Length: 417
Image (cartoon, rainbow, N blue to C red; front, side, top):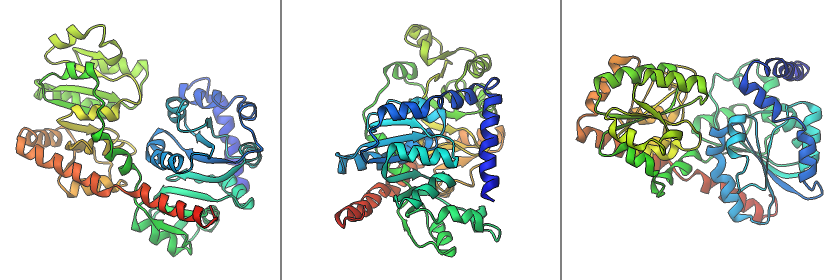
């Protein structure tokens, strides 16, 4: 079976080599790994121990950064290496100051795993959520290097818990300890004989719980918003944008801030063609008078890393992805005490189900649903109550980072970390 796995990794690299000529994102993935081992060898002193944190992408980074930063605070003498699988994470956080080094993760081949671990010489490793790389995990296990999975979450439909999942479960046995998001994940691991798990919760809540307390105004956005009611639409895809475009015809007095998931010229031009009177954030400084004069202006956010601070301006938030594989981060909006709307593909996300149950979030299937929800949002009392429930939910769920650090500090005091 692992011959097939390694073959699939090899074929995946061939795929990347071929399609990098046609796909910009694939090209970034490939180019970011050119000469990677040479760069690592040049920068890293392999005779010294390091702590390795791995994140698949930007979302996992935001989920796990509270643990990294708490680790840095409690163990300031440790040298930290952060790795990313995806360009969307690496490109935004390549200069992240709380890590001593930031690299791409080489593809999960047996040779790469051995060489990478040789070069960075890790004394413990933290992987966020659900990146299960067989060769890396096996090599760490063989070398008795502790491996911790942070905010891990499992569902009963996954192959690990099927009758045919024995081979897949082998990877799970290489983990030293699991910090699980929910009780279902704990129970599923127990069912297959893995008891090295703690129910700590989701570290994303710790990250977003602090956002609403931070004073991070964006002056030009404040000027754009003025006294208008505002819909902030985050991480949108085309089906989301089509809904919002139709909604704008019904509620022209609302201002709209759109932060699309994909930021490239083709998509940005498409949004501009759909939303007349729109302006990009990158142009707003030069054209602020135009924005202020345009009653129905739409602001298109054409950068990454700002969205989480823009929800503070929202009266209502719309989160994209719900008409595709699944919704994006809804907690960054909820922490500001904002009612949240998203599409129907939310059932894999516990926080979405919880917020719907609390009447703080609303799922829509079409324009009619969206208009019905938006009509309710015209009632200030309804909107305020929904927003307050959002805020309280985030604050009540926070605390996972502290539980993880308590475990690690205990291990350190006992000399077993």
